[in-house]
Every structure is written in C-alpha cells, then in structure tokens.
Length: 350
Image (cartoon, rainbow, N blue to C red; front, side, top):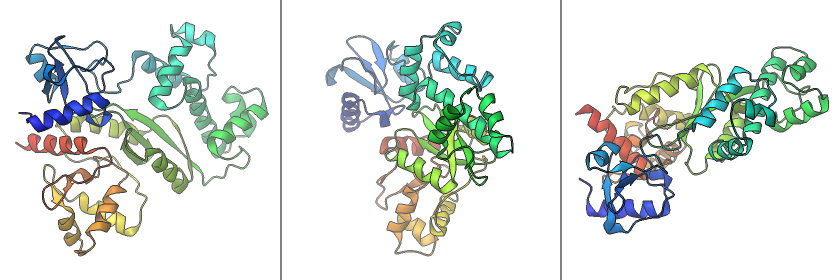
C-alpha cells in the first residue's frame, strides 16, 4: 500500500524526472491507460489522473500497458540495441579505427551512435573506441613491446598522432609511461535501480557506484590518482563477476558478495567498512551502534562520514545504516534507493 504522503512524494519525483526514483515506483496514467517510469519524457498528467505502483507487475495487473517512450519493462538506462551492437563490434576488433563507412556496414547511423554513446558514457562512440585502443597500447608498452609496435597495432600511422592521443588519455607520453602506472577498466551495469559504474583491474574491483551519485566524477578522479592508473572502457574478470553477482542480488538469490576488491581509505575508514560487512543481510544498524561496536561511542559523526566515503555501493552495505530514531539518514545513491534496498533485503528473508 502506497500512502497518500508517499504518493505526493512520487508525484513530485515524476514532475522533476528524478532519476533517483528509477525502479522505486511506476505511475499509471488513467487518461491514457499506459504506465511509465519516473523519468519518462512524456507530458506529465495531473495528480488525480495518476495511480502509483511499486512494481511493473502491479501496474500490468491493474490493466495498464507499458509506455512506448520510456519502456518501463526494461532496466532504466538500459543499453539500446545500437549501443550493444557497437560495443560488441569494438570487442571483436578493439584495434580498429572507426570511419563513417564502417557504421554503414553494421547498419548504424554515425550521428545516432554519437548521441547515444554521449548520453550513456559521457563520450562519443569514436572516443570510446579510441580509449579502448589506448588501453591495449598501454598493456603492450608495459609488457615491454616497442612503442612503434603498440602504435601500429592500434591503427596509428603517425607517431605524433599516436603520442598525442596516448598522452591525452593516459596522462603521460608512451616513452615516459612508468611501469608502476596501471590500467583500470570500466563498465556500466544496468540494474532495476538505474545504471551503476564498475571499475576494476584484472584481479580486483576498485569502485562500484550508481551513475547518478553526486560527486561521482571527483570520486573517479581520486581513484585514478590513488591507483596511479588510467581508466578506459573494457571488461576484466572482477567486472564480469560483479555484473553476475548484482543480477543475482536484485533477483533475491545472493546475500554475500564474493568478488575480490581493493579499498582506498584510511585505517579508520577501513575499520568502519569492515564493520558494515558484519551487519547481517536484511537487518539495519544505527550510526551510534556502529560506533559503539568499534569502541568509538562518541565518534558517530566520523563513522557516518566514513560510511559516506564507501566506494563499493551495495557490496559493502552502507545502506544498512540508519538513524538512531529509525530515519534513513543519508545515502550517496539517494534516499529512495536506500529505502528500496533495505525493503528488498527484508522481503527476501520473509
């Protein structure tokens, strides 16, 4: 049952197209008979013409049909068929330098690809493919191959063009690129609550966050500096692992994540994060209780700040921390998502 107060909250989120409510509710429009996600670009109905549902299944059972514009039966931010096709094409031949004629071969429009990739990844498709090539070049140079070999293998005939592109993406020229620099790869993972960004190397996961999280760009830059790494598109075993585990988690089939990870934080922050992992699935704990468990009873504010610096959303469950009075408190991914995650875990245990 969605209370009248919650209905008003959802309606305000609908008017503002608040992405933090993706997956939290669906709205049925009585005048048209369709149901939509919160960020649907269609003209907004009046409040009295809205019916709110927690799941798409509830909306379907209430005889509403899915909106053709926002496609509420797919994950929010779900990759279009064009994006999926082009990403697969890059992985089949990552050294390829794309031209307009190549788009016609795969029945794709270059301007459409540019627009869709910019919206999803924050870069054009050509930039995506270029970054992927540079990741390969970096690996080859680190493994001792001559720079000229890396240049030719990634499709650059001009050494100056290769050097300029490499330096812009990696932050250092090929010849000055030190062995202690490493490469991190990134993927988008579609979830019922909106897309998440995962970053990792060949051995561990380094970051997992909702794309809409405030300050995510600064968080990524801090990671790049701390890891002394360049971040490029691509897949690694830990990224494939967390993608599978998140799917199982949202389906209610996974309670403990096993993907290996690397943490960047102070000793105090790492103690706080270790404490979060001790909170059982489906249960919550207050900031004060967490501080007392650490023997730092008066440091609950410092504990709260450390929770906010958690770099592995859901996996390290800072969403299980609530206020001493039962209020949800803060959450980088948005309060609506935090509430959903808590309720999701409790329902699985029932």
